[in-house]
Image (cartoon, rainbow, N blue to C red):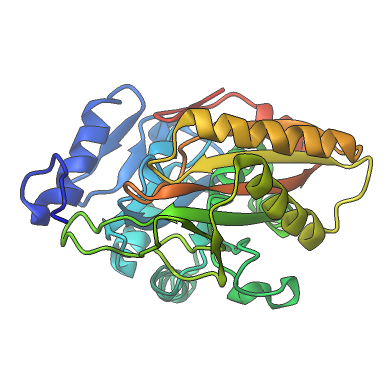
Length: 332
């Protein structure tokens, strides 16, 4: 089947989408000549700053969360591809306002290669930078092998919580410890009902039969080993929530954040029905949902499916989560 997308030349996808993002949010972000997406208030801040990187094609993530109270600079790569380290080094130098920089990297091979090369170069220059890696996909490795887990939508609430801590004037060491604590206490699982096409090539990045879904599908169509016949919203929610609760060993009386992240083609109607079951199920177990999001946050073009992300919360993390922020796609 021929790809149908409202694009121009495939070679200009990244440039044009970033220009559109910047032009439609001129009061919040700006786009540099080297395609760094920058918080417009960055020049005036006196705090720890936050830099992140990742491929485009997952909008609104990651650049849609640049702004006051979240990410200060994002370094976008081409579609589904990590940027090179030189632009990350440039971003960190631009972001550093004397209080240090938190560098957030999602655990994917290309992102990690760039992140490690960036840190090696930054450390030679003696800059005050700490890297935090998000790796919360429970489908492809057990918790004791967390370094093998993929980074999914959990990076976005981590940006918010780290941004809230930085806004309170915490030191870089403190912000990094808070971000790491949140990262260690979150878990994400994805389900796919239909794959997506690569917008530059038109190639399918994953395929499923019409009556199938796959629990554990990765961000770019990587298999998760959970292929099965399509289930109802409630059945799917329970399969995924049980796996997530078990992974985090969540107990009665604990407080959780619950996020439903649509993958691109799953309607808000469907997402809300899934969230309803998750919330009621947690209530039955005596688990308190203290923060929630239901939206498209980290997408994969027109892939059908969603991710559920849960995170153990406490009063401090909740304060950072609820702190003010203004970005193109998240406002508090």
